[in-house]
Length: 264
Image 1 (tube, rainbow, N blue to C red):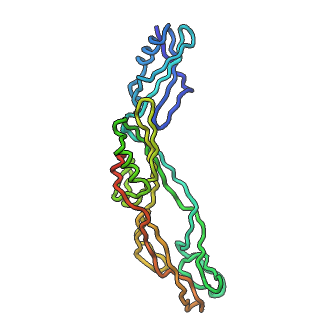
Image 2: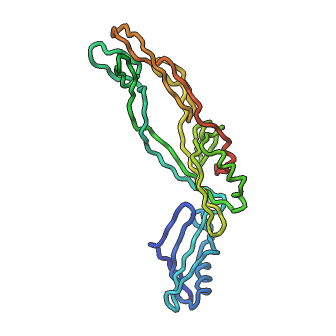
């Protein structure tokens, strides 16, 4: 009678498949070992489906075989990976000035690092750590679904922002909050395509106040910059460098991300 025992320490898993290794005893040939192995396997495992075509068996002794079984991600099913961290960025304006010290220090209205150079004031700013959020959607599609038209649609979205609200993995992103950083695709031995879509997220801001300039709205990946002017500070009896205008610029084209065919 055939027996099947798993080698638990040999378990492996990634975004596209789960693999298990088994010892099959009490059989005398690979065909019987494979049949006994398949008979003991579940058709699904954690949302993955049994890949009964690529089951392999290897003879260890005349009555003991080593079997390898995989469960693969069903075509069209997506997995989600994310990375929340920080990256270095340069700013010229603070959230608020907590305190000023010295003899009548001028009020620069949040401008950071105001220094004199060649008799003129300039805003040097400072480097800080800025929160970042990126994620990858891994998807497996049938060969017929990844044709030239679909690849071109992916290409046309690369380096662009979403033109409308979109929901991915249960998270809703407003217009211009996602930047599509590209897609990598690999065709496996079965002819299916494994695709990885990478996105960078940037939160929209509303009702900002910068140096006395109020009600500033900025969509996620729009670029904001600040113009400064020399203003007489009557309290400090000196010239202060203060924001006199805020500009919001569109620096990325937008696109309809529904063309990517992503999971909601």
